Image 1 (spheres, rainbow, N blue to C red):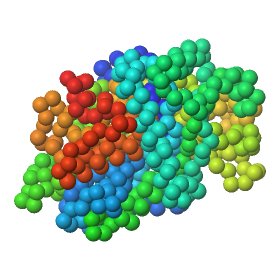
Image 2 (cartoon, helix red, strand yellow):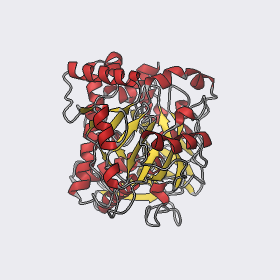
Image 3 (cartoon, helix red, strand yellow):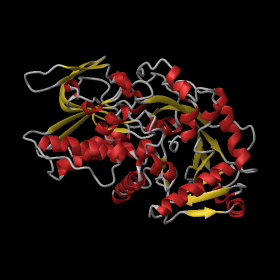
Image 4 (cartoon, rainbow, N blue to C red):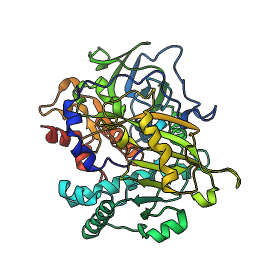
Length: 491
């Protein structure tokens, strides 16, 4: 499950962590990650886990996508839709290969994800101050677009039960006077900018306590949650079904890319990707590795690039029925804690809660620059175990061990927003050795409502390049996400 964007105070108050750290590139994902509920709670949770991990390796492709999370699979899905609609019709099938270092969808999407909830107005005031009104609005338009696109795909294909789609709404609890003031400032700024707050409801303390058992003010707005791995699996399978005259898709798991070399060949393949199983020649590369982006793009190491951040999550059982817990998704403590109940199959079942956060108690480093998800932080674990019993008195057992506990690595940026677009445009004078490479990464713990749309942008950029058309920026895409704009910010 992904946290909502990091509060500005976290970044501003811990600049020394970023500047004093060695800023070395991220390593490859650990080979023995902790077991996530999403990936290991049932034997059929990940049917594609080791797909393409044995046998012959594909030796050439038109497009190599590195990473099999919602971004990488999203790019393949959007390209397959374009091929199906004949938006792109090459002379021979477009050969696309997805390469994954571990099991299918084993990154932050498949380990931490779950909240499919667009931000309604959070940080509106600070975004207006930093980026202007129009750009601030696009932040929320993109998230609404992402969410509605995915929900439409799920519902139109009849996948709701398959992916455990829950439309229960979302409540942000306001624990302190400062949080209340910040929420009021953001709401006022949103209204002043003409931003619609339809569906947003301010909940008095008495209402929250009487309805949910938590003695705090709250703000409720529309939202969903979902089993992220199952959703990404469905998207991949749908893209795979489109294989034919114009499109072909191959997945190789347990095939980490260790290097990318610019080595043009006689058959117009610009790059050679090296893996422990052999090499692949390809014409274009998509970096969909999020926290691990600097492993293949070392210039993205450090605070001007994408920082690995370890998030911790657990699955714990409530002591009361789902009737008392509801189906709401939640956020509290300035976004450091976030949780939602899993759907129950019968009335007697006590709901299982997926709860993440606690990094604010991990120590001075906030789990920054940690790219190892093979262990958990005991201090964070203590915080998570104590959190729900303290917020919802009587609904969770004090001192109860969770049913599962795990970690996953998120990719943070200093702006709090992802890098999206051609890699060569990240350099002021351009960089010919990266031409034909693209990136969508750095979602700062808020990928579910943003990544799928960013993957659509990358797919459209590639289609325009293939067809000789000019790419036009969608109205819903924040300009500051684009790599050539981040170039200006970084230089």
